[in-house]
Amino acid sequence: MDVLLNNAGISEGGSTVDLPAAVIRRQFEVNVFGPVLLTQGIAKHMVEKKKGRIVFMSSVAGLTVDPFTGAYAGSKHAVEAFADALDQELAEFGVKVATINPGPFLTGFNDTMFEEFKSWDDDPSTRLFDYDKLHFPHEQFDPEEVIKVSIDVLTGVDTAYRHVLPAHTVDDIKAQMDGEWSRTVNDGTRPALVQTAYDIEPYTPVESQK
Image (cartoon, rainbow, N blue to C red):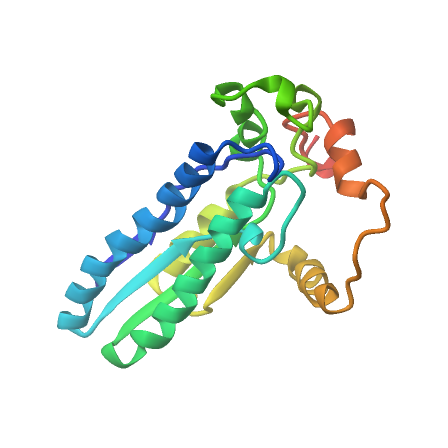
């Protein structure tokens, strides 16, 4: 069976008010437009064969949002929308669609997101935040689980549509999503994750992995 894994992706960290326009456009070109346009042609070949599997490497950022990840999360929310639509549109043609949603895994990807500001073509004096002081605001897990689950999804052993990883964080992610329905506007104080971005050291593993 033909399989397409849309795995290419970049992460541009920074506050929504500071991100240069070119950076935001690049984020969506790589994470959204590229995979979607590539998928169009391949999906039609799969339809002709009446079989195929399309997998999008999304992120928990496609379901939730952290501070300083608006561009990246926005791109992954868009990926989630396209994947969901495709799953419904291609069902009658024998083509399967699935997403993989890694959380904070220690691969370097998350930490370098918070270093991208060094390449911005802007005037640093106009920035709201000092990005030399900010880091990815989560401890991070060993990526082995993502590798195993990805193989199972690609080979059809795992037939679930969505795969939030690590698996033990699923309930927390669901609770965070459900909490959006009772959320009120901010109270003017700094959120905990923003403070964590100031306090945490980069490339921090979860306690059990230290």
